[in-house]
Length: 253
Image (cartoon, rainbow, N blue to C red; front, side, top):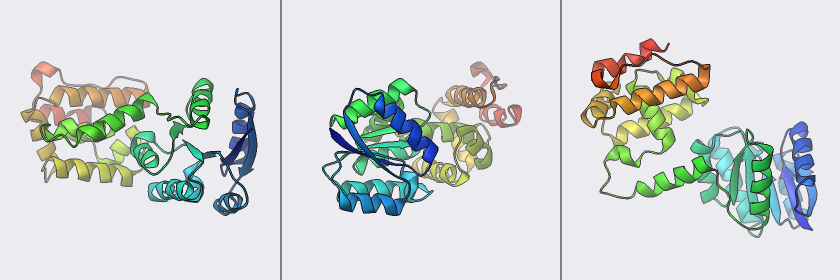
């Protein structure tokens, strides 16, 4: 039997997770906790081989979430940790894995993906979604000095860049990306710093200079369609210019 601890504040979510675990092929002995204090108390009482945690149980912000994963790994270095969370994987997943988690799974995942993640992590193996694996690959590419600055962007960084190029504000971008404005603002500042752009117009000029205007327009249209279920009006690649690309922000509002 694999000693398992579920750490999730929502009792309904814990019930669903327990039900899915019982249907798993793994032989699991399951305990559960609903608060940060209960989590720490359980870890001081018992030895666990497998921990499934919603890191927001330790705080609502990303910093607290990452710190909780790091603390769990320090308190139970022998345990395989699966993060099962509503926190965006492209924003927080890399940090969770770097701080000791063996897997990172969004709560929007399908039942079969949950079972796969449980089987792999409970078996001591790493589990990454396709999107998170690509994010790790992008992080590796950042250290290649031969790359142009934008070639080191992760998927999320490019989306924030594209939305800025298309004239979207931080508030509008946050709505399309399903993120809070503070997170999007941090991404935008980092993107501008890496491209040595002091203003949003500098991002438009960079996109034009490096032939990224069409890619930015396509990314904006895809995000808009995914958010609202309809295509945005975008300028054609043949007529892309700094001012035309910037105009997409008005076209899709």
